[in-house]
Length: 279
Ligand code: AMP
Image (tube, rainbow, N blue to C red; front, top):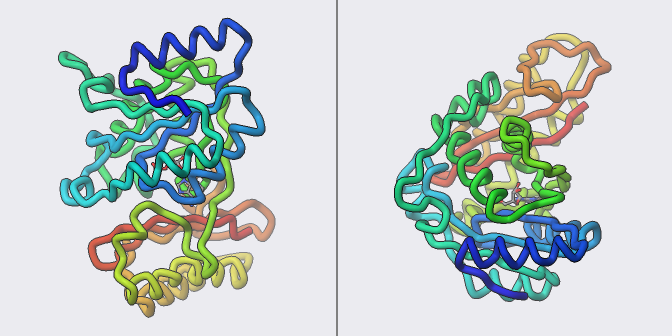
């Protein structure tokens, strides 16, 4: 694996490879890697000839200062994991490489997507996500961008940004990788103490409960029961909602159409998110 720190270096390397016919797959991350990230690298390896990953903890997407300051950093282990997974290039930029002096962030018209769920709970978060992915796709010309379904709304936001900016990049969305007890893998999980870690399976239990108990008609009862499971496990719920594929909130269900349950909840000061197709 070749490691790059300078945007101009990785850009010219990739342009050279592309001129020889390489197809690029890109897995952007914020590091503290786990098997969720590595599964995306694996998909990139199997579908493109040049697999690229990046590690950059993007300050502009954190609406909470302490969440940014406490974001785990495990760079040496990350490099070992990427190397073992067969990643070809790793971009490890400094803040200045991503946001050079004089950089002016554009405003992305994300519309409805920025008003619900993560958009509503984390003001400015998706503008920051778009800024960094926009910069990264400019530095790393990407044929296929690999994203995780765990961040369902983020996938939709990035797809919209790609359309707005006109990047010639296709998105492939990988399934959520979970621990044995169902907890979705997340870099933030390492911030849980051992009791919190055990309790954290409550998110998966709440989502699974909804999946097993959703009924045609009013959805209020099953949602309340799901919130009850979160509370029993020590979570403070930020939101638990049922939506259609476009993230429009559902209050009733016709018994036929697709339904997604999306949750954000605090275990202590650690905020976890997850989602599941429940119908
Ligand atoms: P992050 O480092 O958390 O910004 O995530 C980088 C990429 O990995 C994003 O596309 C995430 O959606 C994806 N990802 C994070 N956790 C998981 C998981 N448990 N399973 C699959 N993909 C994931």
